[in-house]
Image (cartoon, rainbow, N blue to C red; front, side, top):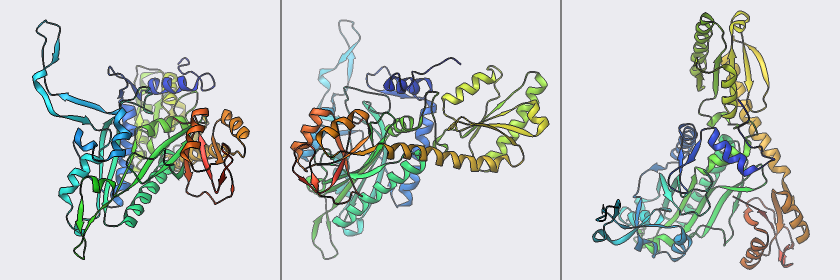
Amino acid sequence: MAKVLTTRAENYAQWYNDLVIKADLAENSAVRGCMVIKPYGYAIWEKMQAELDRMFKETDHVNAYFPLFIPKSFFSKEANHVEGFAKECAVVTHYRLKNDPEGKGVVVDETAKLEEELIIRPTSETIIWNTYKNWIQSYRDLPLLINQWANVVRWEMRTRLFLRTTEFLWQEGHTAHATENEAVEETLKILNIYSDFAQEYLGVPVIKGVKTENEKFAGAIDTYCIEALMQDGKALQAGTSHFLGQNFAKAFDVKYATKEGKEEHVWATSWGVTTRLIGALIMAHSDDKGLVLPPKLAPFQVVIVPIYRKPDEYERTCKRAHEIKKELKALGISVKVDDRDTHKPGWKFAEYELKGVPVRLAIGPRDLENNTVEVSRRDNLTKDFISQDGIAAYLSDLLDEIQENIFSKALKFRDENIREANTWDEFLELLDTGGFISAHWDGTAETEKAIQEQTKATIRCIPMDAKQENGVCIKSGKPSNQRVLFAKAY
């Protein structure tokens, strides 16, 4: 198979786009800014869904579904919320089309105008809190722990597959609590779930932190986040968890009767991760040959390719390949036997290398005689000949080793690319090399905005494990008591 990818060194953005398309993850649709997620890409999302859904349910959350359409009047009830999303909203004004009397196709039927315009959900806080008003009356109804798997629409001007599209898939949790402490505890619990998922399944190391006032979610009191570093030195926000205080409860008058018989507004959280996690997966691990998928999220963890020249060799190698597949499946390993006779083995090897399959097995007539199988690892591109005896247990351990190796490599890269800047000149110099910059900031929105306007770098987060440390702001020279993380970001 000829070279199919631009290299990362040549053009990182083009490498990414090439890889998404050539590895059959997604493609641009006929609707500008939207994507078609192809079966191989959607299989990765399904694996993510399954693990996150399990983690949510283990912490007593349940799934529900709420409408795609939100009355426009709902958005006006929480001022910060509408201000934050106003520029991204798609609005439905009519509900019917009709044939153009001049024969030019179809046109909007102006007699079918909606009494109230509807917003296609950019996020669901407003429609959900209007619903919660009917579900919550007493402390006995709390906590309410609900998650939704859905799509949302945010009208983006500059789009990129998975990372930023007009429509994308996500999960959004919305919970209600009797006390502030319970709501804050929930917010942090979800943040830890996101962090564990990113590191244990995506193999992506993340930094947990708090967003600044400028960067927090519209309508939140506090926004917590996990931030990851991609191979080009840019940061990627991989998930957020918001403490909403009583803002939405007050906007929609959601109250509950306490044990003492008093009426109180409930306390709220919301949280979500999206299909941009697939983008994170690609950019954190993949190389110039294609995807490098962590075994826990690979659509299939092992592919077996029979090697043959004659019809009888085809039958014997395919038979043994399917026997090995059965052994592997018994240990919970997902396997594909590629016994197509329409493509040569070399073509198949290149295809699965491009698609990032963690382990490839090749078995030919000589392997049948020697009771061996060729084992190729995608993470480090090494090959070994292994005995077929005990191959299932061997591969089970190998997949764990690959998962750990992928994470360790990304962690090493991340840690080597967190650098301290103590002066403005140092900051500018480090910005050119990429990565996270740990620097003092005076805590003002004015300084934060000035830095962003001059450099395009933003404060990714105030790390939760940041120690108190006296210093001076790199931009203003004013006092500061801790460092924050700056970076250019997706």
